[in-house]
Image (cartoon, rainbow, N blue to C red; front, top):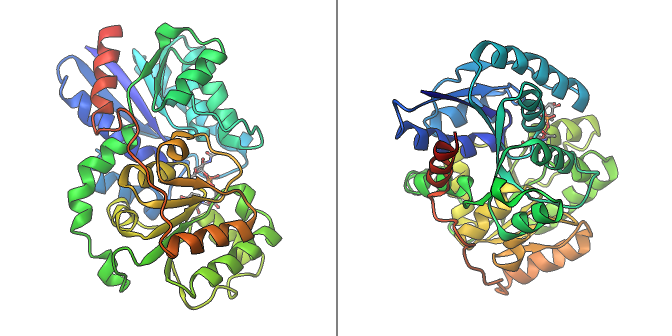
Length: 363
Ligand code: UD1
Protein backbone atom coordinates (compact mmCIF):
# COMPACT_ATOMS: atom_id res chain seq x y z
CA UNK A 1 0.00 0.00 0.00
CA UNK A 2 1.44 3.37 -1.05
CA UNK A 3 0.86 6.41 1.13
CA UNK A 4 0.40 9.81 -0.51
CA UNK A 5 -0.11 13.14 1.27
CA UNK A 6 -1.60 16.03 -0.73
CA UNK A 7 -1.18 19.54 0.62
CA UNK A 8 -3.77 22.33 0.57
CA UNK A 9 -3.22 25.75 2.09
CA UNK A 10 -5.04 28.58 0.39
CA UNK A 11 -8.36 29.00 -1.38
CA UNK A 12 -7.15 28.21 -4.91
CA UNK A 13 -5.75 24.85 -3.76
CA UNK A 14 -8.97 23.17 -2.68
CA UNK A 15 -10.53 22.77 -6.15
CA UNK A 16 -7.24 21.33 -7.42
CA UNK A 17 -6.87 18.63 -4.77
CA UNK A 18 -10.56 17.58 -4.79
CA UNK A 19 -10.37 15.81 -8.19
CA UNK A 20 -7.05 14.20 -7.25
CA UNK A 21 -8.63 12.83 -4.08
CA UNK A 22 -11.49 11.38 -6.11
CA UNK A 23 -9.10 9.88 -8.66
CA UNK A 24 -7.11 8.12 -5.94
CA UNK A 25 -10.30 6.67 -4.42
CA UNK A 26 -10.49 4.45 -7.52
CA UNK A 27 -7.23 2.84 -6.42
CA UNK A 28 -8.47 2.07 -2.92
CA UNK A 29 -6.48 -0.83 -1.60
CA UNK A 30 -3.35 0.23 -3.52
CA UNK A 31 -3.12 3.84 -2.34
CA UNK A 32 -3.90 5.60 0.90
CA UNK A 33 -4.48 9.26 0.01
CA UNK A 34 -4.29 11.70 2.93
CA UNK A 35 -4.88 15.45 2.97
CA UNK A 36 -2.88 18.00 4.95
CA UNK A 37 -4.36 21.51 5.32
CA UNK A 38 -1.71 23.99 6.40
CA UNK A 39 -4.26 26.58 7.55
CA UNK A 40 -2.75 29.35 5.41
CA UNK A 41 -6.36 30.30 4.73
CA UNK A 42 -8.57 29.71 7.74
CA UNK A 43 -11.76 31.82 7.53
CA UNK A 44 -14.93 29.77 7.08
CA UNK A 45 -15.55 31.53 3.75
CA UNK A 46 -11.96 31.08 2.53
CA UNK A 47 -11.63 27.44 3.53
CA UNK A 48 -14.34 25.29 5.16
CA UNK A 49 -17.05 26.08 2.64
CA UNK A 50 -14.79 24.68 -0.09
CA UNK A 51 -14.24 21.40 1.75
CA UNK A 52 -18.00 21.02 2.13
CA UNK A 53 -18.92 21.95 -1.43
CA UNK A 54 -16.11 19.99 -3.10
CA UNK A 55 -16.97 16.96 -0.96
CA UNK A 56 -13.47 16.80 0.44
CA UNK A 57 -13.10 14.82 3.68
CA UNK A 58 -12.01 16.59 6.84
CA UNK A 59 -8.23 17.00 6.46
CA UNK A 60 -6.18 14.22 8.05
CA UNK A 61 -3.73 16.87 9.31
CA UNK A 62 -4.45 20.53 10.08
CA UNK A 63 -1.37 22.65 10.75
CA UNK A 64 -3.18 25.85 11.75
CA UNK A 65 -0.43 28.24 10.65
CA UNK A 66 -2.61 31.27 9.79
CA UNK A 67 -1.42 34.60 8.40
CA UNK A 68 1.96 36.27 8.76
CA UNK A 69 4.81 37.68 6.74
CA UNK A 70 6.05 35.46 3.93
CA UNK A 71 8.95 34.20 6.03
CA UNK A 72 6.79 33.60 9.10
CA UNK A 73 4.08 31.79 7.18
CA UNK A 74 6.47 29.66 5.12
CA UNK A 75 8.59 28.81 8.15
CA UNK A 76 5.61 27.85 10.31
CA UNK A 77 4.29 25.54 7.60
CA UNK A 78 7.72 23.93 7.27
CA UNK A 79 8.13 23.30 10.99
CA UNK A 80 4.68 21.74 11.32
CA UNK A 81 4.76 19.78 8.07
CA UNK A 82 8.10 18.21 8.93
CA UNK A 83 6.50 16.66 12.03
CA UNK A 84 3.74 15.16 9.86
CA UNK A 85 6.23 13.67 7.40
CA UNK A 86 8.49 12.26 10.12
CA UNK A 87 5.50 10.55 11.69
CA UNK A 88 3.76 9.37 8.51
CA UNK A 89 6.71 8.61 6.21
CA UNK A 90 4.64 8.84 3.01
CA UNK A 91 5.86 7.55 -0.36
CA UNK A 92 4.92 10.81 -2.07
CA UNK A 93 3.89 14.38 -1.31
CA UNK A 94 1.68 16.23 -3.80
CA UNK A 95 1.66 20.02 -3.85
CA UNK A 96 -0.50 22.14 -6.15
CA UNK A 97 -0.37 25.69 -7.46
CA UNK A 98 1.97 28.41 -6.27
CA UNK A 99 1.08 29.58 -2.78
CA UNK A 100 3.42 29.73 0.20
CA UNK A 101 2.23 26.32 1.41
CA UNK A 102 3.29 24.84 -1.96
CA UNK A 103 6.96 25.77 -1.64
CA UNK A 104 7.06 25.22 2.13
CA UNK A 105 5.85 21.62 1.91
CA UNK A 106 7.80 20.63 -1.19
CA UNK A 107 10.99 21.91 0.44
CA UNK A 108 10.37 19.90 3.60
CA UNK A 109 9.64 16.75 1.59
CA UNK A 110 12.70 17.17 -0.63
CA UNK A 111 15.01 17.54 2.42
CA UNK A 112 13.58 14.33 3.87
CA UNK A 113 14.18 12.53 0.55
CA UNK A 114 10.46 12.03 0.05
CA UNK A 115 9.42 12.21 -3.57
CA UNK A 116 7.33 15.21 -4.53
CA UNK A 117 4.86 15.88 -7.32
CA UNK A 118 3.98 19.43 -8.37
CA UNK A 119 0.61 19.80 -10.03
CA UNK A 120 0.40 22.96 -12.17
CA UNK A 121 4.12 23.04 -12.81
CA UNK A 122 6.05 25.11 -15.33
CA UNK A 123 3.91 28.26 -15.33
CA UNK A 124 6.01 31.43 -15.40
CA UNK A 125 5.08 35.12 -15.29
CA UNK A 126 8.80 36.03 -15.51
CA UNK A 127 8.10 38.61 -12.81
CA UNK A 128 10.10 37.78 -9.69
CA UNK A 129 8.41 40.53 -7.70
CA UNK A 130 5.38 38.21 -7.55
CA UNK A 131 5.67 35.92 -4.53
CA UNK A 132 3.99 33.17 -6.56
CA UNK A 133 6.72 33.28 -9.22
CA UNK A 134 9.36 32.54 -6.58
CA UNK A 135 7.19 29.73 -5.22
CA UNK A 136 6.73 28.24 -8.70
CA UNK A 137 10.42 28.38 -9.65
CA UNK A 138 11.63 26.84 -6.41
CA UNK A 139 8.96 24.15 -6.21
CA UNK A 140 9.60 23.01 -9.78
CA UNK A 141 13.34 22.88 -9.23
CA UNK A 142 13.03 20.34 -6.37
CA UNK A 143 10.04 18.27 -7.54
CA UNK A 144 10.37 14.76 -8.94
CA UNK A 145 7.18 14.75 -11.02
CA UNK A 146 5.94 17.89 -12.77
CA UNK A 147 2.39 17.91 -14.10
CA UNK A 148 1.78 20.68 -16.59
CA UNK A 149 -1.46 22.36 -17.76
CA UNK A 150 -0.36 24.03 -20.99
CA UNK A 151 2.39 23.97 -23.64
CA UNK A 152 4.14 27.06 -22.21
CA UNK A 153 4.81 25.03 -19.05
CA UNK A 154 6.61 22.35 -21.07
CA UNK A 155 8.64 25.00 -22.90
CA UNK A 156 9.62 26.80 -19.68
CA UNK A 157 10.74 23.63 -17.92
CA UNK A 158 12.75 22.50 -20.93
CA UNK A 159 14.41 25.90 -21.07
CA UNK A 160 15.29 25.60 -17.37
CA UNK A 161 16.94 22.25 -18.02
CA UNK A 162 14.41 19.99 -16.28
CA UNK A 163 14.73 16.40 -17.53
CA UNK A 164 11.95 15.43 -19.95
CA UNK A 165 11.15 12.22 -18.09
CA UNK A 166 10.00 14.20 -15.03
CA UNK A 167 7.49 16.30 -16.98
CA UNK A 168 3.94 15.36 -18.07
CA UNK A 169 1.35 17.41 -19.92
CA UNK A 170 -1.83 16.18 -18.25
CA UNK A 171 -4.34 19.05 -18.48
CA UNK A 172 -5.86 21.16 -15.75
CA UNK A 173 -7.18 19.69 -12.50
CA UNK A 174 -9.01 22.94 -11.67
CA UNK A 175 -11.03 22.44 -14.85
CA UNK A 176 -11.83 18.89 -13.63
CA UNK A 177 -13.61 20.45 -10.65
CA UNK A 178 -15.33 23.00 -12.82
CA UNK A 179 -16.66 20.30 -15.16
CA UNK A 180 -17.91 18.13 -12.34
CA UNK A 181 -19.64 20.96 -10.42
CA UNK A 182 -21.18 22.83 -13.37
CA UNK A 183 -24.51 20.98 -12.99
CA UNK A 184 -24.72 22.07 -9.34
CA UNK A 185 -23.75 25.63 -10.26
CA UNK A 186 -26.57 25.68 -12.79
CA UNK A 187 -28.98 25.22 -9.88
CA UNK A 188 -27.44 27.98 -7.74
CA UNK A 189 -29.78 30.79 -6.65
CA UNK A 190 -27.06 33.44 -6.50
CA UNK A 191 -28.23 35.30 -9.61
CA UNK A 192 -31.73 35.65 -8.17
CA UNK A 193 -30.37 36.55 -4.74
CA UNK A 194 -28.55 39.56 -6.20
CA UNK A 195 -31.11 40.28 -8.96
CA UNK A 196 -28.58 39.60 -11.70
CA UNK A 197 -29.42 38.37 -15.19
CA UNK A 198 -27.32 36.13 -17.41
CA UNK A 199 -24.84 37.95 -19.68
CA UNK A 200 -25.82 41.27 -18.19
CA UNK A 201 -23.45 41.87 -15.27
CA UNK A 202 -19.74 42.32 -14.57
CA UNK A 203 -17.91 40.12 -12.06
CA UNK A 204 -14.82 41.60 -10.42
CA UNK A 205 -12.13 40.03 -8.23
CA UNK A 206 -8.99 41.87 -7.13
CA UNK A 207 -6.49 40.72 -4.53
CA UNK A 208 -2.93 40.84 -5.94
CA UNK A 209 -0.58 42.76 -3.63
CA UNK A 210 0.61 44.68 -6.73
CA UNK A 211 -2.93 46.03 -7.24
CA UNK A 212 -4.35 46.43 -3.76
CA UNK A 213 -1.48 47.04 -1.33
CA UNK A 214 -0.87 50.65 -2.41
CA UNK A 215 -3.43 53.28 -1.38
CA UNK A 216 -3.29 55.29 -4.58
CA UNK A 217 -3.57 52.22 -6.83
CA UNK A 218 -6.52 50.89 -4.85
CA UNK A 219 -8.24 54.29 -4.97
CA UNK A 220 -7.91 54.34 -8.76
CA UNK A 221 -9.24 50.80 -9.04
CA UNK A 222 -12.28 51.74 -6.98
CA UNK A 223 -12.86 54.69 -9.28
CA UNK A 224 -12.76 52.32 -12.28
CA UNK A 225 -15.30 49.99 -10.66
CA UNK A 226 -17.60 52.94 -9.97
CA UNK A 227 -17.39 53.94 -13.64
CA UNK A 228 -18.11 50.41 -14.91
CA UNK A 229 -21.01 50.06 -12.46
CA UNK A 230 -22.76 52.93 -14.25
CA UNK A 231 -23.01 50.64 -17.30
CA UNK A 232 -23.87 47.25 -15.77
CA UNK A 233 -24.59 45.70 -12.42
CA UNK A 234 -21.19 44.96 -10.96
CA UNK A 235 -20.61 42.14 -8.49
CA UNK A 236 -17.49 42.45 -6.33
CA UNK A 237 -16.88 39.60 -3.84
CA UNK A 238 -14.02 41.02 -1.86
CA UNK A 239 -10.91 39.13 -0.76
CA UNK A 240 -9.88 39.70 2.89
CA UNK A 241 -6.60 41.29 1.80
CA UNK A 242 -8.47 43.85 -0.32
CA UNK A 243 -11.09 44.51 2.34
CA UNK A 244 -8.47 44.99 5.06
CA UNK A 245 -6.57 47.43 2.83
CA UNK A 246 -9.71 49.37 1.94
CA UNK A 247 -10.41 49.84 5.62
CA UNK A 248 -6.87 50.74 6.63
CA UNK A 249 -6.59 53.26 3.74
CA UNK A 250 -9.97 54.78 4.72
CA UNK A 251 -11.45 53.96 1.28
CA UNK A 252 -14.42 51.85 2.39
CA UNK A 253 -16.97 54.60 1.75
CA UNK A 254 -15.72 55.51 -1.71
CA UNK A 255 -17.35 52.57 -3.55
CA UNK A 256 -20.50 53.60 -5.37
CA UNK A 257 -23.78 52.09 -4.19
CA UNK A 258 -24.11 50.56 -7.68
CA UNK A 259 -21.30 48.15 -6.82
CA UNK A 260 -22.58 44.99 -5.12
CA UNK A 261 -19.91 44.33 -2.51
CA UNK A 262 -20.04 40.91 -0.84
CA UNK A 263 -17.95 38.67 1.38
CA UNK A 264 -15.93 35.93 -0.35
CA UNK A 265 -18.31 33.55 -2.13
CA UNK A 266 -18.25 29.73 -2.02
CA UNK A 267 -17.19 27.53 -4.91
CA UNK A 268 -20.58 26.63 -6.42
CA UNK A 269 -22.07 30.13 -6.27
CA UNK A 270 -18.88 31.68 -7.60
CA UNK A 271 -18.89 29.23 -10.49
CA UNK A 272 -22.48 30.24 -11.21
CA UNK A 273 -21.36 33.88 -11.34
CA UNK A 274 -18.43 33.03 -13.64
CA UNK A 275 -20.62 31.01 -16.01
CA UNK A 276 -23.19 33.75 -16.33
CA UNK A 277 -21.13 36.96 -16.35
CA UNK A 278 -21.01 39.14 -19.45
CA UNK A 279 -17.50 40.23 -18.46
CA UNK A 280 -15.02 39.36 -15.73
CA UNK A 281 -12.39 41.83 -14.56
CA UNK A 282 -9.77 40.10 -12.42
CA UNK A 283 -6.18 39.78 -11.30
CA UNK A 284 -6.60 36.13 -10.28
CA UNK A 285 -4.70 33.30 -11.97
CA UNK A 286 -7.36 30.61 -11.81
CA UNK A 287 -10.21 32.80 -13.03
CA UNK A 288 -8.32 33.49 -16.27
CA UNK A 289 -8.45 29.73 -16.89
CA UNK A 290 -12.03 29.17 -15.77
CA UNK A 291 -13.32 31.97 -18.00
CA UNK A 292 -11.32 30.57 -20.94
CA UNK A 293 -12.88 27.15 -20.45
CA UNK A 294 -16.35 28.68 -20.26
CA UNK A 295 -15.81 31.07 -23.18
CA UNK A 296 -16.59 34.05 -20.94
CA UNK A 297 -14.96 37.43 -21.63
CA UNK A 298 -12.13 38.16 -19.19
CA UNK A 299 -9.93 41.22 -18.71
CA UNK A 300 -6.84 40.65 -16.61
CA UNK A 301 -5.58 43.69 -14.74
CA UNK A 302 -1.93 42.64 -14.67
CA UNK A 303 1.15 43.29 -16.77
CA UNK A 304 1.94 39.61 -17.24
CA UNK A 305 0.34 36.22 -16.98
CA UNK A 306 1.85 32.85 -16.14
CA UNK A 307 -1.09 31.33 -18.07
CA UNK A 308 -0.49 32.59 -21.63
CA UNK A 309 -2.72 29.97 -23.26
CA UNK A 310 -5.73 31.88 -21.87
CA UNK A 311 -4.66 34.78 -24.10
CA UNK A 312 -3.38 32.92 -27.17
CA UNK A 313 -6.23 30.40 -27.27
CA UNK A 314 -8.84 31.61 -24.78
CA UNK A 315 -11.05 34.62 -24.16
CA UNK A 316 -8.66 36.38 -21.79
CA UNK A 317 -7.27 39.86 -22.60
CA UNK A 318 -4.13 40.82 -20.71
CA UNK A 319 -4.52 44.58 -20.52
CA UNK A 320 -2.02 45.65 -17.88
CA UNK A 321 -2.49 48.05 -14.99
CA UNK A 322 -3.16 51.20 -17.04
CA UNK A 323 -6.75 51.64 -15.88
CA UNK A 324 -7.72 53.92 -18.76
CA UNK A 325 -6.95 50.98 -21.08
CA UNK A 326 -8.85 48.58 -18.84
CA UNK A 327 -11.89 50.87 -18.94
CA UNK A 328 -11.68 51.27 -22.72
CA UNK A 329 -11.41 47.51 -23.28
CA UNK A 330 -14.25 46.77 -20.84
CA UNK A 331 -16.55 49.26 -22.57
CA UNK A 332 -15.72 47.72 -25.95
CA UNK A 333 -16.68 44.28 -24.64
CA UNK A 334 -19.93 45.68 -23.22
CA UNK A 335 -20.59 47.20 -26.66
CA UNK A 336 -20.42 43.71 -28.16
CA UNK A 337 -16.79 43.42 -29.29
CA UNK A 338 -16.13 39.99 -27.85
CA UNK A 339 -12.89 38.05 -28.06
CA UNK A 340 -13.42 34.60 -29.57
CA UNK A 341 -11.71 31.72 -27.85
CA UNK A 342 -11.50 27.96 -27.64
CA UNK A 343 -10.63 25.38 -24.99
CA UNK A 344 -6.93 24.49 -24.52
CA UNK A 345 -5.68 20.98 -25.21
CA UNK A 346 -6.52 18.40 -22.50
CA UNK A 347 -8.71 20.73 -20.44
CA UNK A 348 -11.38 18.07 -20.52
CA UNK A 349 -12.22 17.15 -16.94
CA UNK A 350 -9.90 14.13 -16.78
CA UNK A 351 -6.53 15.59 -15.74
CA UNK A 352 -6.58 14.13 -12.22
CA UNK A 353 -7.23 10.63 -13.56
CA UNK A 354 -4.20 10.95 -15.85
CA UNK A 355 -2.03 12.18 -12.97
CA UNK A 356 -3.13 9.37 -10.64
CA UNK A 357 -2.43 6.78 -13.32
CA UNK A 358 1.08 8.11 -14.01
CA UNK A 359 1.96 8.36 -10.32
CA UNK A 360 0.84 4.83 -9.60
CA UNK A 361 2.98 3.51 -12.41
CA UNK A 362 6.00 5.43 -11.13
CA UNK A 363 5.74 4.71 -7.40
C1 UD1 B 1 -2.69 33.83 -1.21
C2 UD1 B 1 -1.64 33.40 -2.23
C3 UD1 B 1 -2.06 33.87 -3.61
C4 UD1 B 1 -3.47 33.43 -3.94
C5 UD1 B 1 -4.41 33.89 -2.84
C6 UD1 B 1 -5.81 33.42 -3.10
C7 UD1 B 1 0.68 33.31 -1.41
C8 UD1 B 1 1.99 33.99 -1.45
N1 UD1 B 1 -0.35 34.00 -1.94
O1 UD1 B 1 -2.69 35.26 -1.18
O2 UD1 B 1 -1.18 33.30 -4.56
O3 UD1 B 1 -3.84 33.99 -5.18
O4 UD1 B 1 -3.95 33.34 -1.59
O5 UD1 B 1 -6.70 33.86 -2.12
O6 UD1 B 1 0.59 32.21 -0.92
N2 UD1 B 1 -6.85 36.58 5.44
C9 UD1 B 1 -8.00 36.44 6.15
N3 UD1 B 1 -8.57 35.21 6.22
C10 UD1 B 1 -8.05 34.12 5.62
C11 UD1 B 1 -6.87 34.28 4.90
C12 UD1 B 1 -6.28 35.51 4.81
O7 UD1 B 1 -8.52 37.38 6.70
O8 UD1 B 1 -8.62 33.02 5.73
C13 UD1 B 1 -6.23 37.93 5.32
C14 UD1 B 1 -5.17 38.17 6.34
O9 UD1 B 1 -5.23 39.49 6.71
C15 UD1 B 1 -3.88 37.94 5.55
C16 UD1 B 1 -4.28 38.41 4.17
O10 UD1 B 1 -5.66 38.06 4.05
O11 UD1 B 1 -2.82 38.64 6.10
C17 UD1 B 1 -3.50 37.79 3.07
O12 UD1 B 1 -3.53 36.36 3.17
P1 UD1 B 1 -2.27 35.48 2.64
O13 UD1 B 1 -2.58 34.03 2.77
O14 UD1 B 1 -1.02 35.99 3.21
O15 UD1 B 1 -2.20 35.87 1.12
P2 UD1 B 1 -3.33 36.08 0.02
O16 UD1 B 1 -3.35 37.49 -0.37
O17 UD1 B 1 -4.61 35.45 0.44
